[in-house]
Every structure is written in structure tokens, then in C-alpha cells.
Amino acid sequence: MDDLAIWLATVEWNGCPDPRPWVLIDQRGDDIFGCFPIASECYEGLCFALSSADRDFAATGLDRDCHIHTERIYELRHTDLSRRLGFLQGDLLKGFWQYAFGNEPS
Image (tube, rainbow, N blue to C red; front, top):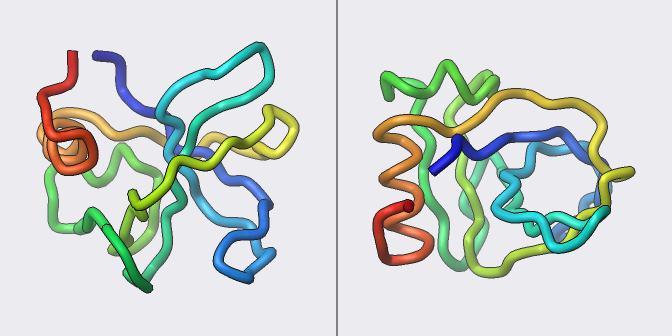
């Protein structure tokens, strides 16, 4: 499996219109991506913790511990994405994929 990109996007989520990181899970057309939001807290639902102590954390481009909210895949347009921050890789990617989808990444 390829690494999963993390992009900064300004899309309203959870009542907040601020820019936030998003994990791009899949491409659903020429201009649409399936994504999970990343937040500093696990507000509700299902969350996968990203710890700055993880050896693969530096590749994410994030600057502190965060949570990927996996309760729903959101569709973002290419024009919503402003800047690539980094990506999930290695054991962090495998752990996330197992948590979110219940199987090993292919």
C-alpha cells in the first residue's frame, strides 16, 4: 500500500471552519477524495491516536499528538486542499489501517 497523504484543508467540520489536517483515504473521481479529519482531541466517536512519540510520527508533518476521527469518510474536493503536510507510513500506517478498516493494508 502507498503511504496515505495528510493535507491541510479549510472545510467546516464539527462546527469549526478552521483549517485542519485531513488524511486522504481514496480518490473518488477526478476531483473528489475520501478523507478523515484530524483533530487535537478525540471529541466523540471513533478516533485513532497519533502520538508524537511514535517513530513514524515525523513523516506526518504534524506538530503535536492528534487523533484521526474515523466515524465517517468525508468527501473533499481537490480545491479544498491547500498544502500537503506529510503522510502516514510504516507501523503507524499499518496500525491506523487495522483500526479504521479491520484488515492489513494491501
